[in-house]
Structures are given as structure tokens and as C-alpha cells.
Length: 209
Image 1 (cartoon, one colour):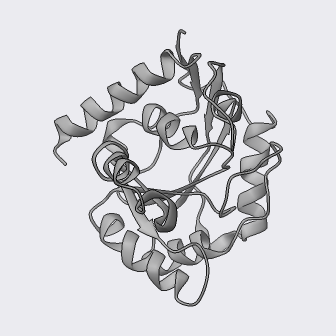
Image 2 (cartoon, one colour):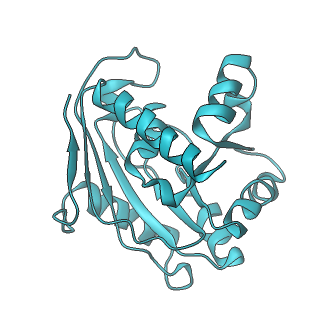
Image 3 (cartoon, one colour):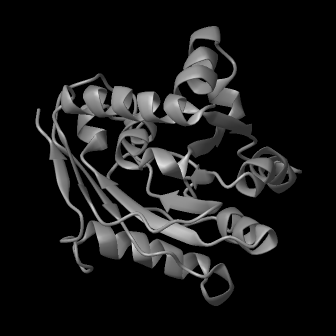
């Protein structure tokens, strides 16, 4: 994708978020070069909201379930043309190797790779345990991890439900050295952002509904 393509995609999803109930974003993007974003996951709207929230210079792509996003032509088109989804296996032998093969080239190219370490969408709003793949990947590729928290997306598009406009929020945290953190600490960082235990006052903007 060209720089203009990233800008156009970003604004397309900002408009979509605005008409879906509005989006507020707190936190300054401090990712430089390749990095991994870890975020909680409760809705298919999460990916669209992160495309709207992360700046075009982050050049985000998403590691997501191959068995869901690439088994139906319509979803495959959305994944490849509109969302920048990289197919990864969710479970079974070789799932980490599949993840590494999918995202390493993007990281080397200086792009941001977004992963949902819970491995599936939450049905009750809680944040589940984080799998170790994101942390292992960051260590192996030598890139930082940026924690991000989302709320409100499950109200817009709940798992197994239908679209309904509602306010959404994104909080962007500070980059973390993967060599000094555990999966539990990454999860705690996302929880802290979501629960307001870190400052949300930096570089705030809102998309009115």
C-alpha cells in the first residue's frame, strides 16, 4: 500500500466509526518502525475501530483467524482490501510458526502488527488470559509492544448479535520492552488502560456521532 492508501483507509474507517456511534481516542502514538499492538477483543468492530484510531504512519495490519476471514469471499475481500488482515492459525500444531511467517515481513518493513492475544472474542466484556504468541514474536523480531484498550465495540457489534450504534473508546498506552514483560503484565497494562488507571489526557480527539 502507498502512503496515500493508508491515509484514505484511515479516514474511511474514521467516518464509519463516526456514524456507528462516535469514537474517542486517548493517548499519543509513540510506535516507531515495526511494533506489535496488543488489544482486548470483544467484537469484529475492533479491527475497524483500530484502523480509525491508529495514525496512518503506523501502517497497521492485523493478524487474524484464517478460518474465519478467508473462508468466505466477502470476508476475504474485506480482510485483504479494506482491513489489511494477515491470515494466522488460531490453534493446533504450527500455529506460532504460522503467526511468525505471516507477520515477520510486515514488522521488518516497519509496519504495525495488531494482535488479539486472547485468541477469540469475549462474550461478557471481560479480558481473558493473554496467550504468549505476541510476546514471543516481539522478542524474536526485536520490536516493542504497544498496549491498547477498547470499550464500546461490543455494544456496536456484539458476538453473535447485530449492529447497533453506540459510543466507542480507544486508549493507547506506552511502548513496552518485550524482554522485561510477561504475558500477564501485558494483560495488566491493557486492563489498566481500560479501567482508567493510566492518564488519558494526552492527544485526545473525538469523532462526533
